[in-house]
Length: 271
Image 1 (tube, helix red, strand yellow):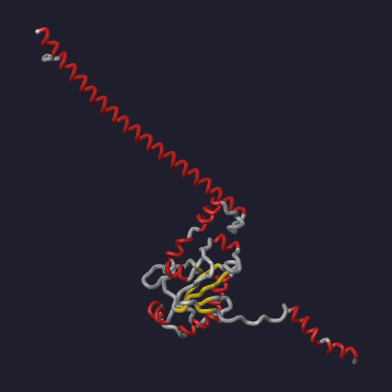
Image 2: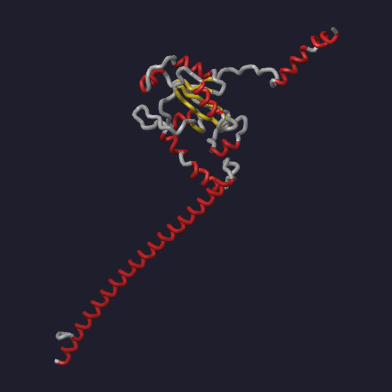
């Protein structure tokens, strides 16, 4: 009996132990994501755009990497959530901004939706990976929109999104970062380390070798160009010399004929 009472008396302690084994008491749910201001993002401190190397290395808590993703998000489901999870976790410190297109734009360019725009906005606000929601997001991104919301990177796959008379509405953004190899090689030349660029040992040496090959090619092109210029100058000078020689020859022959010709000064003096 005593053992039973002792067991009951320790029930609170056992419950605390079981909670600690499960990871402690559950955290209180955070507030839904905020809506973006119509005027855009206005930071308290100067906002400078980050490079991908800086973003991957990690940024201070007060300066998260502002990543933007957009879509229709009709009947929000696990596929949407997983895509946003990937966008949220692409950098160590990410502030995920999600743009949701309005009913007017969606019906015009894609088709009718099941959920209204307000319902779709609200669904995104309650996704755990979303930090900010942009209502009535533009169908095609512009530099002005990216600047207004201080967006560092846009999250989207490489598959062309054909719509609104365009082969790919994200084409101009993808072209800015399409050739990642060139980006890494340039930053290695600028002094960034492979670790800062999240590049392995083999790729680092591959990129450095490519840089050396490119330098050799550039040197060869420079030598070829200089050689062509030298040949052109020699040809130009040769032509000038030939013209001058011809002029001098004509002048010499003319003077000779004036002196020794049939009607020249020499013949006149003897006649």
